Image 1 (cartoon, rainbow, N blue to C red):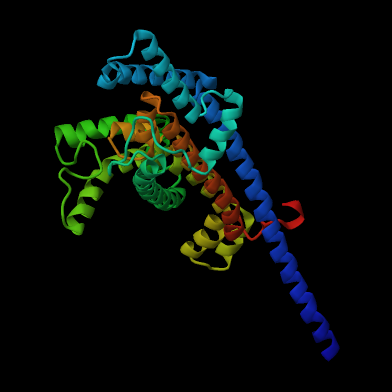
Image 2 (tube, rainbow, N blue to C red):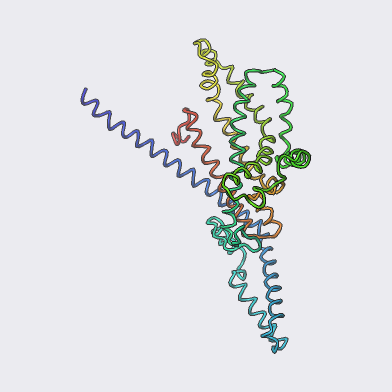
Length: 373
C-alpha cells in the first residue's frame, strides 16, 4: 500500500509537468503563428501606405521644394551665381535624401519600415503632432490609444452583459410580442455604428440638446478630477450608445437562438426532473455550454468594431486611433498610418490569442494543447 502511494506521487508530478509543458508549448506555437500573421499584415499595410514607393517620390519632391525655398530666401547666398545656387541646392537635397535613405530601392527600405513599424520606432511624424506638441509617432499614438480603449471597452462590456441577460430573458418567452419585436429589429444591425451615431447626434445633441455633439471632454477642460470624469462620461454616452444600438438586436437574436437550442437538450429535461431551480438550470445547463459559441460571436463583433472605428470616431470627433488614422491618411503621413495599423494588428492578435485561452476557462471539454487540439 505504501509502495503504491509512493509510485502515484511521481506519476502525479509527471502529469502536472506534462500538462504545463503542453500549455507552454501551445502558447508559444500559437503566439508565433499570430505574430507571423501580424508581420504579413503590417508589411502589406506598408506597401499600400507607401503606394509601392510612390509616396516616397512625393516626399522627395517636397524635399526639393522646401530646400529650394530655403535657398531662394537665404541672404547669405545672394552673391552666388545661378549655377552655384543650383549646385548648392542639389547638394542639400542629396544629403537630405541620403539621410532619409530615400536613395535606396524601395524593396530594401520596406523591410526597414517593417521592423520600425513592429517596434513602433517610426521616428517623427511628417505633419501631425500630439496634444502636448510632440511630433514622435510613438507619443502621438500613445495619447490616442487610451481614448479608443476607453470607448470600446465601455461599450463592449455593456453590450456583452446586456445581451446575455436579454437573450436569456427572451429564450424563456419564445414567441412573445417582445421576442417578435427583437426578431423584427435584428436587420437594423446591418447599419454601421457611425450611421446610427448620426441619428443619435441629431436627436440628443441637435434637437433635445441633452448631450454634446462630439469630443471627449468639454472646453476648457474642468480642473477638478470629478468634474473632468463626469465630462468624459457625458461625452462618452453617444458614441458608446451608437456601438451598442448598432449590434444589440442582432446579438440578442443570435444568442437567444443558441439558448433555445440548448434548452431543448435531454440533460436540461433531466435537470428539471431533479427539481433544480430555473436560475441554476440556465446558469449550468444552458449558459455554460453556449459560452464558447457566444464568445466567438462576440470576438468577431469586437474585431469588426476595431477596424470600423475610423468613421465612428471621426463622426463624434473622438480623439482616438480611428480619427488619428483618418487624419494621417488625408495628410499622407505614412509613419502615423503605419503606426496605427500596427496597433490595430496587435489588438486583433491579442483578441484572437485570448479567445483560445478563454475557451479553456469556460469549456472543460477543451484541452489546451492536448493531442493537437
